[in-house]
Length: 280
Image 1: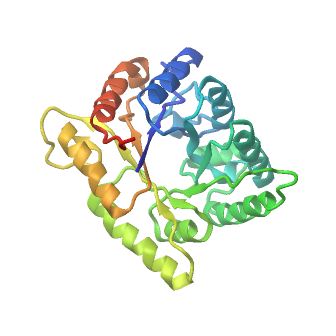
Image 2: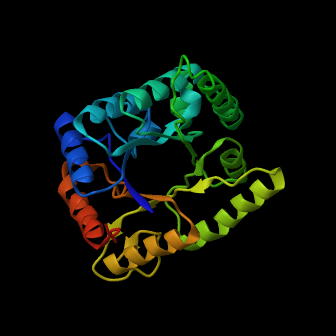
């Protein structure tokens, strides 16, 4: 099972030097995938959780591709209705080609109504637009002579019934964000049922979970939250469930954390130190 890391590409402590150090730390610890998130306009509803500066994901990953050597690069997640699908298709295909086939395109529908309004995008139609745009991206990539996408994998985020159906129809993987192991187990079963109903292969399972290591076991927790023993047990449960990749998210919703990335790096180092290694 591959392990990835969600790197904060926003907030008061984020700048090119910090992003460089994040990339060097994540790759140096042996993680398989480095992912960043997406917002275009930092409207008040966005700024409450993800304040400026916010580094645009395609630009950021293109730059990080030149700083890193072999680690996978991805979005968790780009908000599909914000950009013309042919622009997304070309940016993703070019980034994948230029990075040596390292891109994972995680996608979602978005949630910030004020940001939709600022972009002139239809908030109420965001699910339908996402489906239409994903179909257009797939169609564009069929022209390998031009786009040279190289088979960029699409990971579809979301936990609603519509999102699960979208993952089955358009996704190479289902990429839910921050839930409990019990919820993931139950909802993953639903994804498999939908795939059977539609006569399609089920997408891979690639969840993003919290990484919050505590000294004592919390009474209620998400996957990836608790003592290091609990975190590693969660990862093992997800492996047994069939997860091909798990992305760790060490950001705990406080923008001030971006001023102190060392705390997140220590938690990642603790996981890396206990991660089983394949014998050579």
